[in-house]
Length: 117
Image (tube, rainbow, N blue to C red; front, side):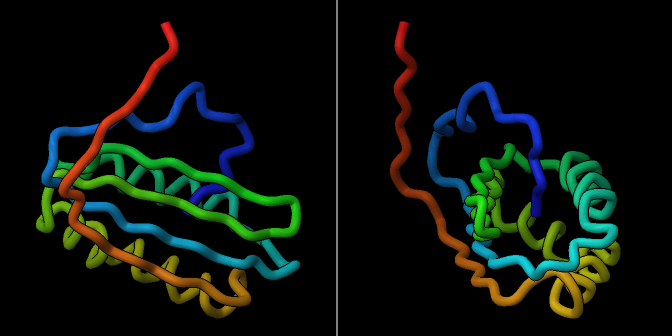
């Protein structure tokens, strides 16, 4: 879901469970035409969904990327999954931007974090 040329300052905080995560792991193709623009638009859209909590992303130089989206409840995740622009971007991803991908959705039952003081 994300290009993230700027490194995040910190991972998304731990939230009080339960909440949901969508883990998207993809291997990109060589042709990334319009990917950055579409990705920026997807980030705008998901930020407008009530219950969206944030995202973490990592990318290898070889093109393997992992994006974890955090959602307060199943309804928020469903709103994202069924968003018309997001659905269109998914089709474009399968046609042009991804060699392969997996999506895992899970309900988080335990969560904690650490910050060095």
